[in-house]
Amino acid sequence: MTAQSTGTKPPAETSTGLDIAGPPQEMYRFLRDHMPVMAVEHEMMTGTSVALHDDVVTVLQNPQIFSSDGAAEIGQVRPLIPLEIDPPEHAKYRKLLDPLFAPRRVALLEPSTRALAASLIDAVVDQGHCNFHEAIAEPLPSQVFLTMFGLPVERTAEFIELKDGIIRPPVDSSAEAREFRMATGRRIYAVLQEAVDQRLETRRDDFLSQFLDAKVEGTQLTVDEVLDIGYLFFLAGLDTVTASLDCMLAHLAQNPEHQRRLVEQPEDIGAAMEEFLRWETPVAGVVRVAVQDTELSGCPIKAGSKVSVNLGSANTDERFWDNADTVDLDRAVNKHIAFGGGVHRCLGSHLARMEMRVCLDEWHKRVPCYELKPGTTPHYTMGLRSVENLQLVWHNGS
Ligand code: HEM
Image (cartoon, rainbow, N blue to C red; front, side, top):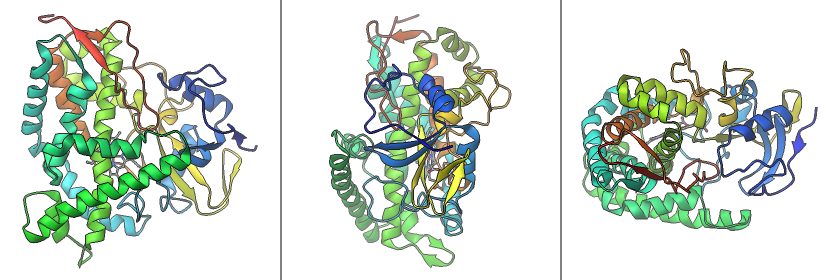
């Protein structure tokens, strides 16, 4: 078998008639059935994309063949830590970072996160409508992250604009996107450098201060290493939970029986969230670089080529999942890979889960019945899937 080519830039509506701004599950099925291993050439990446669950897991579980070194092109000037560091060095950084995001540490943040979620929702509940993305999904995780990390919360809007400049650059061509990302990246490094300089003078009670004192195998982290960790966290902390909450609320607004379930049985929110993560997979794909000639499903992959793994497709692959197309809140076993897999599995998953669970809980206590504003359709962004036009309406007291 040879990898099939998609040609160049994907149009907004593909030749298959599938709208890529809409729900992607149909597109994923099309890829699995017709182009499970496919040559791609578009502004985000030139290389090979893989859609079958088993191929995706093979890539994630074999970092010695599919390296993360140089995989991301997100405006950074050095490898991001730990995302672009391969084993065995990768483990040294995870040993340092994992305890900061362990369930026990995250639990300490739950009361303040709950209070923040409640106040953001209280601010809109009486008006009977809101743009959920702007009112809740963006400020909640951003403020939690900035406080814990040690960046000024009052500059949230500026920081959100910066991370959007990397994740969704407002330009058309790949050359312009690269340029835009590099320029935005320089601004992010400047923000981080300023915060590091302040802490070099006086330490505070935040992660940045802890990183400056941290040692990896007895050696103190350098300022560059702190910046390389900070750059990754800046992007991960300010986008992923927002995108996930958008996807979940867009689904719930269109599925009243699932809303009712969360209102009547809030103890099921945790399991429901995992199923929404499987179905929506907001971080739809990650990238690796093949370090040797290899193959996937019989398709040759050349050493040096990029491999884009479609997590969203893997999470809905009927070859792996029973009732893959059913959003089943009673799914007994749910081994989704929305947080990735292998050594680079998401470091922030406990924090993300706590923030989303608290938000869904507080929202459904106050807004038990809601829908999309009539006449609006959720528009999903590419790459990391958020829904910026998520207009919800509800009746007060309903
Ligand atoms: C629902 C929200 C989130 C989702 C869906 C998500 C998804 C992912 C995925 C798919 C990866 C794997 C990347 C790869 O293999 O190349 C990853 C890695 C990572 N995530 Fe998350 N993430 C979320 C929230 C967060 C948060 C809140 C943080 C931190 C504040 C975070 C920090 C990280 C870091 C540092 C890595 C790199 C881990 C490594 O390379 O060892 N994530 N995440």
